[in-house]
Image 1 (cartoon, helix red, strand yellow):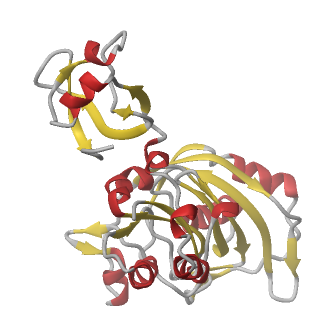
Image 2 (spheres, rainbow, N blue to C red):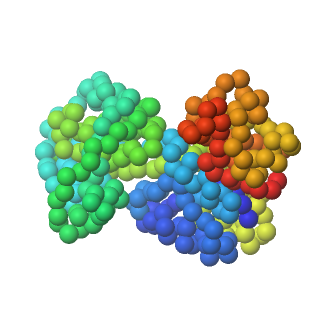
Image 3 (cartoon, rainbow, N blue to C red):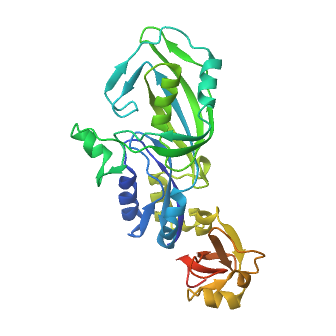
Amino acid sequence: MDGLLPLWKERGMTSHDCVFKLRKILHTKKIGHGGTLDPDVDGILPICIGKATKVIEYLAESGKVYEGEITLGFSTTTEDKSGEPVEIKRVERLIDVEEIDAAMKSFIGEITQIPPMYSAVKVNGKRLYEYARNNETVERPVRQAEIYRFERTSDIQWDKEKGTLSWRFEVACGKGTYVRTLAVDTGKKLGYPAHMSDLTRTKSAGMEKHQAMTLQQVADYYDAGTIDEHLLPLEIGVARFKRVDISHEVWEKVRNGMRLEYKAFHLKEMPTKEIALFYQGKVVSIYQPNPNEKNKLKPSKVLRNEV
């Protein structure tokens, strides 16, 4: 069994929980996921099965789309609704939508973020959430993130009694973006402590909500013997690379991991990035420029030895 499975992760489960359950459902150990989702977040979790586990790293590097909610009025230890309140500042007025939209627009492009303490980022060989759980403080690394789109998708909801103000949003972003931190930083831009009060991932690694299956659906398809019909092809995992179709003659060399000149692939110029080699309509290998040999490429990952 080989392929990609767009799993709809339910809330209350970790990404590892999903992999563990799928191994039992599908009776195979060769399963991994391409992008962690927090337990409180639901949505698309790309799952790789069999040979598709070789493209996990490429899935994790792809862009993602989220729908969620930002709430001003208080921040939390985890930057989402699961944490304990840290700073409280009541919102005593209905903030203009123009002010909110302008604040959100200011984050579009390349931004810097400081990862939340409750995250898996490693500092000195230890994950930040381990420091947080031990009530230890540590200097967190500044990271780059890319925001392609960040828009308000609902009216503003002001709760005068609670002193909070909320609205829903959609964000399209690059790998490694902390949407929780984006919510917090948006609040800071508006002068208030804030947190991410809701989040769903609607797109990841080219997989969308309408394609997704729940764990129960996966189990039902497996029991019915139709699970292969619902898996996506391995080729989706390499969609971001330039596709190069090769001949049988070249395939015989590629399958043996030979280093080849770029002209062997009928390319007009030496590529500067990795390329995906296809034979008979299937991706077989990822090749990259070889820094030690001029005008030659070498395999960075062999995906198939047979087609």
